Length: 440
Ligand code: GLU
Image 1 (cartoon, helix red, strand yellow):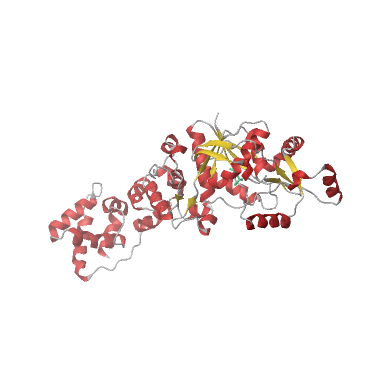
Image 2 (cartoon, helix red, strand yellow):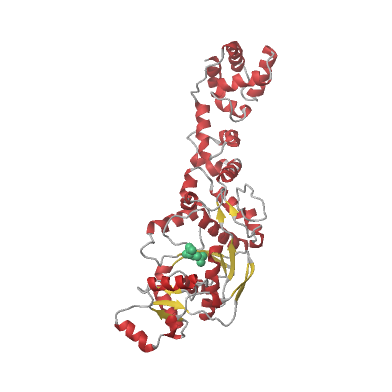
């Protein structure tokens, strides 16, 4: 069974970058009939907040990507301790006592000599007695994972292809702080093992973490999951701007962006497949394949999102939007107005045009024409196609055609120069209001 997880830290709102990771994990699970889990990475007690956990759940629900299960790292402290003890007994984690300043100095010295700033493993050389003495002084150690330098770390990445790292060029990663709190690396591996995670899809900023984590899986006696690291998301002017990186999903929701538009865009940018306005995610699921993702950054463009959104709104059936429409607006009105909308909320503006009043001060030369239109409109068969009847009769009576025929009518009837197809709009306005507006 294929099992993926989305593992946000609840230290802020989801933004488009981590939403993309959620979408890709969800699509991969759906594509293969697997499970998609939400794992709340809340080991950082100071920065994690319950309101962000709630917001993450609400965002996923709004997107129609409710997870098949939810886990919380903070509930698993005893398990993390137990697995850590196993690694300590095997010498795969070791205590280190350097202060941040000492480590920084070591780094600077190495960099100054033109060497990579790899941790020198001084702590590994401490004897039992030296460790006991340091602890007796009241110094608490932080803990590093001892990388095995004997063989290269390799994996076949679903996006990046074959990956190879030499562990001797990497620092033994710190996995636990002196106060006992965790860094992200090890609890994530422990949880991925216990939760049967088969595939980890995340951004390429995690590639070097993956190299270290692959050894952690082995040290804990487990096979690593399959990994896929996607290229990063950038804004339209390169690099995800501070603004985009800090905008929560609610920003898009409030701007009238449909969840389908976010999914359709984020599922396809950075791939060799076209971005298409899918109102239903099924085609995105069946075509999903991480091999189609490229190594170049994926460009997120808010204008592209807006136009994709409009094309999705144009497909939405009345039942899908009824609760968000103004009172009284029915399926016929929705179908008439929908092709002109950028957002569902925009329907209210056109419904107000239908219901009126509308303001228009016709040009002098159109007054007689409009009076004639009012007279003809009153006599039409409104069950048929009143717009076609009205314009045909007016053309015959006045000799006007094209813009001179249509524009004064549109202005008088709607108060605007542009808008939905008049043939669809006029029956909604109806005889009484139409005659009144034309004769005003
Ligand atoms: N909580 C980690 C993060 O948000 C999870 C990374 C991962 O997917 O393993 O970066």
